[in-house]
Image (cartoon, rainbow, N blue to C red; front, top):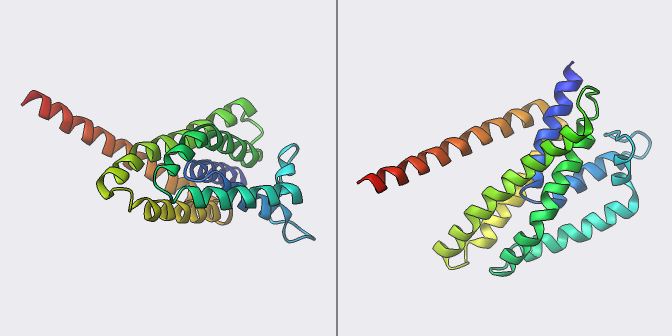
Length: 195
């Protein structure tokens, strides 16, 4: 039972962090599935075990370097976010399905859809917030916000593997806070329209 809850917590945390940066959680999972060599930290089932191959690790490292560079440059980061609209939800789907495999009652399609929704939701929130940062700081704050997103994605990914129950709770609390903030903002807009 505890392993099942941990698997779901890891799946939620990794899929959510993929919405910020697709390659950080994928690379962390790939390294956990590969190291230590004699007994890897994370055992992924077929076909997800391909993530831990040397070629996948190398490709993910290169893609991560590119992503972390272009996401810090104003205007280029907007183009990158448009491209990542397809990549981040896909990464979330793969990560959720790969880590929820300890639960045999979850159909793979449901796991994939959950990963798409989590990563896509975080990516959408990022896509709404980033233009505001660009407009209010004339693009000078983009590198800082991008760096914070990368740090959050890194630590949520690590927590998801090391302490998956806390990662799942962290994601749920974060989602609740985002929904509350959205509702407050919408209520303020309605109040301004009524005045």
